[in-house]
Length: 339
Ligand code: FES
Ligand SMILES: [Fe+2]
Image (cartoon, helix red, strand yellow):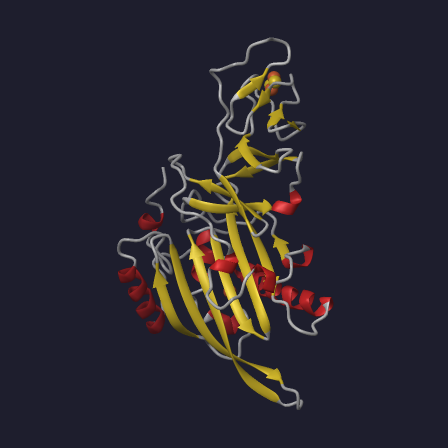
């Protein structure tokens, strides 16, 4: 396996799963950024992520731990730990251990997605994760879309994919023709650089069969919003709208898990099988990307075509004071917040 050219410890929010998969009282082991973690949901529905190992004798709380109210109980000797990592109970003595504390991780949940904040320096979150339905003007609200459901979700095994690959994808206009089988190469019609986000809009015409049976050309738009390096949101409108999230979360220094979530718009007269087909089509598109990414070697500097180099230069000047720095960050820049 090729070593990763970029650090696998970027700062930002990263998806760790789907909210529906962790119900009140559930406990699960996780491993991200080289850390063993435990996630649990309190009886009141609060998501908690802690470092995995009990501060008594080191049992892994994710393997056999149980939820007790707001706390998690260790399977080894029953010590209990709060969402803040404090010891709240030693079952066989009256006092608790006030010295030892388990490390905690900032979490948030939006649109049925569970996120953790990662910063190797331990710094607090620098920005929030918005709802995908608030990101793109004109995309409508959550009530205009079907629930995510199983058919709208896809996750890979652990693969040698860096979050940077997915981050660059939205501005790699040429690959749409070759990887996604678009009839033509799309045009970048808008770019917008924020402090922690980067938005683009692509115009791409596609063909569909009209009511008279003849093919007609429809102007399609794809909007993308990259938030940090871990989260790529998009909104595509053509025959029905699709909102999607491509989320890449490093597991360790070599591998990541990629998760894809896709919400299909509610369209008049559309039955469930058609909705699922639209979701599956979207998943098929990201799977086509993954087939490239899992064998890709990050090339720095890249050998860009003239138009790509021009776009890259524009992006670089626009992001002189911003992070991250898509579409083509220099290695030291991309790593600058790493430990
Ligand atoms: S190791 Fe957790 S209570 Fe003993
Ligand atoms: Fe792609």
